[in-house]
Image 1: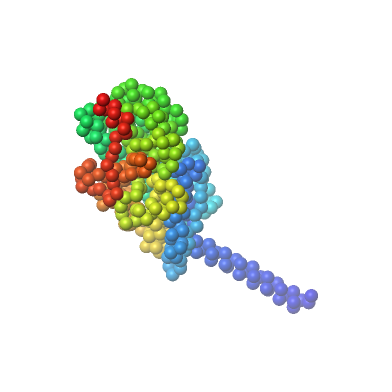
Image 2: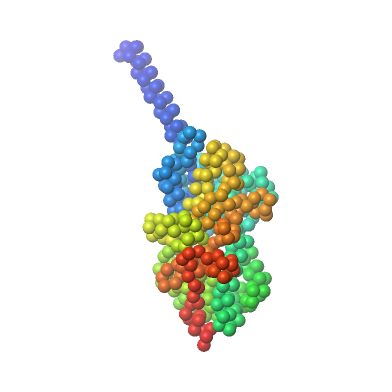
Length: 432
């Protein structure tokens, strides 16, 4: 091979290498990486991933995200936080998303203690983190306290702890009214898992229920991982409770409701039980979870024009009803709108655009609270925005029972809402 031919080959190889180098950044430049972090071995994390998958595919199929004169496809990166068990694992998962996977944004997070720790890591790296699971007010109070550090945090779902308390108390009030209509004084036991997020709910319930006409007769704080609450339920019955107010977000919810139904505890169960939001709840409780009533975000009612199409698509695809951690679906649409408005991936510019969010989603109208409030970057709660729902398992179907016209939110009622039903064995005990 002569020198001229060798030179030509070297030039050809160099050209191919340069072409390869130049095409790779181009492909990456047309891709926006979004980390989805959650406890992937549990329903909460599964729905983080499912909601994000649905939104990413819809957005990509519709052409992606417009940035400048180009379109960008969303690429999701899954991170198992193991946060129900270990806040340390959650922080490590967040660090990996940022430093190894090099994502552009993060959505998800569930257990408040773990999300508070993950928030610190995200903020140190100026990473925009849209929370879709943790309710602790501190997460947004941090934004008010130190805006420059924490401005990259926004909550999508659920509404904050203060509003969760308000909604769950309204549900409890609805049940108390049913009991009172029978000429029986409502007596409530509080059963809340022993986690930080539930502490303010317990304190508020103990202080507020008496003024609502409900006598608090017992307070119990089992582990979120408890598999046997026979002793707690027996204590509730012996205390004479005819209502149980729950604050349960972990696996405890299945054990509690199964045994509540099996033992036919003569007390209506109402409050927060995340496990009761899932579509196979009656299967995993062997049918004993019937009549459980819980706060929820989604149901097959017309909150907005987006609700039923989202709900039906989710059920068709995953054979599950969406729980509130599927708020990752709305998180991706919120990010898309903000990126396109900012016309850049610069975090500070996207933060400014996020603060102007006004989007209609399956859960309601999504508008962020301002920096002049106690919890900036929180989703606005109330009629016309996101209200949350009360749902009850009736005849094998998860039905919306709140807001109910004439109830605590006035005339507000979403089409498809049905009347609340006292569990038959509770009704029998109250009318004997």
